[in-house]
Amino acid sequence: MEKHARIYVAGHRGMVGSALVRKLQAEGYENLLLRTSSELDLRNQAAVAAFFADERPEYVFLAAAKVGGILANNTYRAEFLYDNLMIESNIIHSAYETGVKKLLFLGSSCIYPKMAPQPLKEEYLLSGYLEATNEPYAIAKITGIKLCEAYRSQYGCNFISAMPTNLYGPNDNYDLNGSHVLPALIRKFHEAKVNDQPTVEVWGTGSPRREFLHADDLADACFYLMQHYNGELFVNIGTGEDVTIKELAEIVKATVGFDGELRWNTEKPDGTPRKLMDVSRLHAMGWKHTTDLKDGIEHTYQDFLANEVLYVE
Ligand code: GDP
Image 1 (cartoon, rainbow, N blue to C red):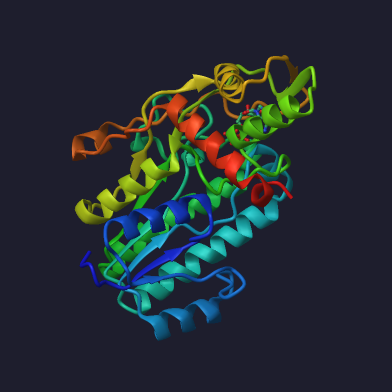
Image 2: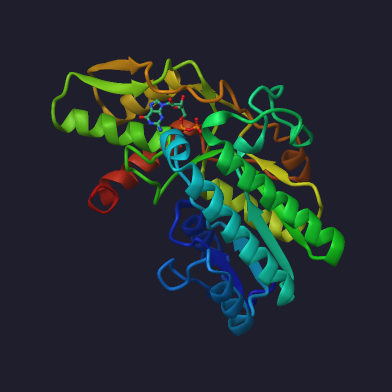
């Protein structure tokens, strides 16, 4: 990517998109095309086509998506499927029509079958049934991968895909009904500490295992792939290490400094038992994460404290 290139970061106000913008700006890219969802509704085919025709981006980072934690995915099943299918179809097709040089599509580790062997290798895609709680989101993300592959195969487009593991960092979603576990725990422990509550409710049994990657590491990996990778097969992005939800809760509890008890609510779903990425292809390409989980959580808690009024309405 040339320094003056016109680069469209779709979803720049989200956790991933904002990390990509920070990374690109730090690398000296100034010609960034950014649109909020009220300026450009990515579900609207005509609006997206007009935006690409007028602005002619040369590179696209497709980080726009309707995202959320286990409860949101399971509740708003139609929106997770429809919104994500529309966003990715509109952007990928317009990128093809206007001759975008390269596009990076971002998916998720939930594309893998629920009972796939661990760690998850890229080749396990579509080898079994999906986890029920996030099946609509996963189907949309699998479709995004297949769109990139198909536009590459039929039209010769250089569209690549990356599948990040669970992410955390600045600009995360702290709404307790919509968020993922890590921001939810930061908020719950913080509020319990401030309000002197004796217990915090945590969902499920605590035994599922999850891998967590800091959003700045993800942005770094995406930038690396945009510079160095032109293959058809999507690439896993993660740390290759996971923890139980119980272990995660203990780390967040210690970081926040809450000294009460955890209460496990097993009425809430556990979701998939484990989804650890096999990151050997990414490592072989020469990229590895740098943020350790404890340091990343400390940094994220400081960001939460600095922006609490914005994050918690
Ligand atoms: P998932 O990775 O798609 O399952 O999504 P989540 O990040 O929402 O949930 C991961 C795991 O953390 C699940 O086993 C949840 O039940 C568990 N968990 C524990 N407490 C919470 C919480 O307060 N919020 C969320 N979202 N998950 C929680």
